[in-house]
Image (tube, one colour):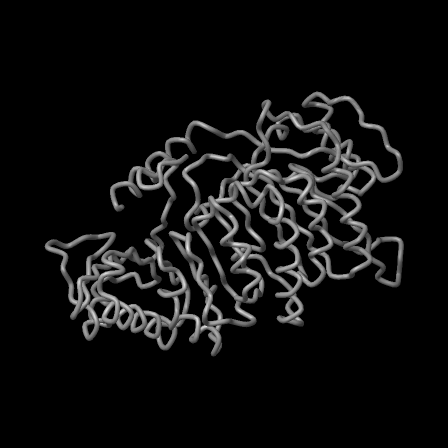
Length: 404
């Protein structure tokens, strides 16, 4: 496992150096605006004089998602809608503006033209959609603009190709299910899907309502062909660990990685039978009783787990609870699990070993800067523990699964 992971990291880095392609969707038409011809580079630069602002989107993210596929998607095409005060209005009235690729301050009726004039973005397999708006009426306007962008047919993707990675972010996820039908139609062959993000600020007024909205979005979106190709699902807003989520995940035959972060409710008897890697993203937030109950049942919930990540969570009691649960589960069922990879947030592996000496004994024969092997005191389970900030990359080809 460790050698495959290292090979995947090297393969991922090599692809990143070779590929820098950009991505794009289509363009939009709110007021029957016809698409204009693609502009030259000089003409494109002049658009900043018309109110568009050129921004630098070339910088790649410093760190990929945990358990990202070993694929170089290139930098994402950004489609972001946000609000700004109308200068001429003294009442603080808001208007919707957009960032389309390399330009911000784009009015909704100009999105078609802005997209068409950025040839370099066409052909991306990687899309980031961000609705940074709170008011429902303005969210509806942004949705109309996005719909017009996505329903055009100006994609420059090779024959048989489609968008492979989508990151969908909202300021307020309550009501996000209204985007489900559109996304189901346009993104039906995804490999990776992120709902929310680890660093994006969201408005949380009603965790239960947010969780219901997210589940409805996923139920509609993943209920189609998207569920047949999806390999990585990451959910950062509130979600309920319930039979509906269990059914969605288990009905995705290729899905092998799951990330969860904020838990609104939890059913103890669920099993996610095919998940091979799981991340609980604590995001540095405080813990809840639901988090503790969930930590006690990670192992039986994911019986085929090979890689486990508990990141940015309080050591005591969340991390300790999870480690004790692993210890007890292996003691009761010694034949079910012999090896596990654990990613955590302590920089010093010596400190980790010292803090867990009542549960595990260090089995590494030499000092390792990246990982250390610890063994169950009363069982055969060996855990490879990685220091903080290490990442797991899913190999493009898994010899055990035999698929790409």
